[in-house]
Amino acid sequence: MDRLELKGKWNEMKGKVKQAYGDLSDDDLRYEEGKDDELYGRLQQKTGKTRDEVISWLRSL
Image 1 (cartoon, rainbow, N blue to C red):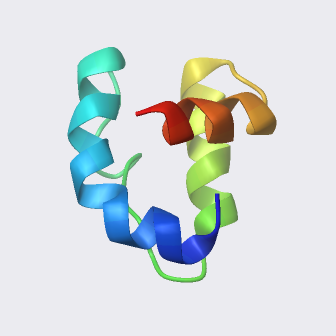
Image 2: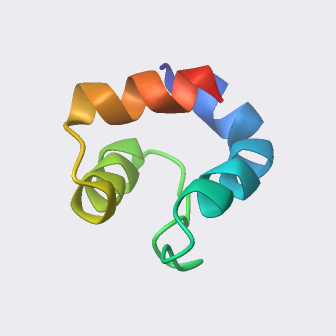
């Protein structure tokens, strides 16, 4: 998922991510420009998925 795609859709996707993983906080889901890897890392820790699984999962939302 490229940065522009993530940035543009993040607010929409964030709600779906929270529905799937209710224990994720707003801090866990905070998107900062240029820090995509940090976001993926937080999602990896909380979901137990690999980086590739997280990216594929986000693309499917």
